[in-house]
Length: 471
Image 1 (cartoon, helix red, strand yellow):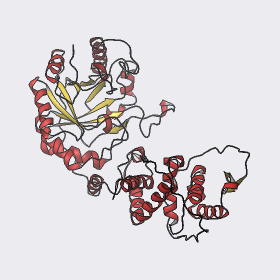
Image 2 (cartoon, one colour):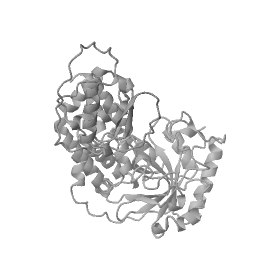
Image 3 (cartoon, one colour):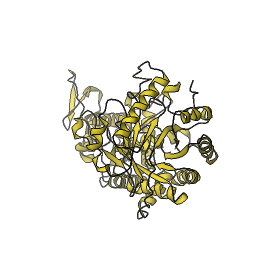
Image 4 (cartoon, rainbow, N blue to C red):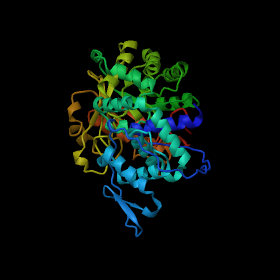
């Protein structure tokens, strides 16, 4: 398949599973076509329609000749062929007007009026309508629209599989927001296939309870080694006795073990977490065998494993039991004595929707059975009444050893909400918040090195301990 074919295949697959589209095309001049008599249109009526998200589009009133198709005004009737209206009306009726937005109906009319649709199934035309609507018809010429139709038609045999996967994901995975944002969740993803095989099996047995030691003062997170030795020595002098190493699947085993050795050489305990960047679009469903390989290599040399951090935090995903327990089982098998710490997060999640009364929010958990402890997340800054939150939102974990997640004065204090304070002043503020967690009953803390933005180019706007030297 040439590059154009690959691009269109990716587009049609994304559209079919409702995950959005990104198209990069090279504009080609449209060929001059000879006037052809209206073609006989063949309709295939026995294909079940897929579900299409409904959204409201306000159609402005335009004082030009127009026609209505199922209540949608199509302006410029003098430029539309009579057979276009007939064919488009038939297609809308067969697809189901409830499955198409107003804008998509107008896109469908454009497709019918621009290219030959005879011989294509209604399902093909429907998916093409989604693609053209997502890309924007103004970005496509007739040749490109015809290629989209043909490519979708060639994939007709995969459409039932795509539909079946979409239904399975909706029924299997708790976090429905993740399904919308993760564009890799398709029938061509071998890593997803491997995860679904794991989901199809019974949960592994619960892990044995391993007590969490008191007095943990962890600093997070280490991903690179450039300035790791000096910076870890600084934190050790400040009284920190543990460091979190985060893994996203791009590392080699030797790299992970190098980071573990750097932490241990600083006379600190190493902890690990399967994390990934803080982006909804980044898939947590990386190749499970590779994730396990990296975690299993590090686990024998680590004191603990955090089951949720950044992309795997409840802020961005509510992990399914099969997903979470599978990784926990791999880690505990590699080190039967390693502590396993779950997470309880208060803040925006796929269930705690933003822009609503926060009194309706609940703490959302990513926690295995028999955890050594729980990381209390989401109340990491000065503005929270920590003691009251632990008694209220996090009351269910009152009898479980807890670690408090600490950020400092406020989120993004050195980037988008810059306070102008230097590194050591911000560190003192973090240490004050740590003391509040300990006074409230937490047996330890996990403190973020930067301001949590992790997108900057300076000491305080990057959370990787090893990237910039502490001066």
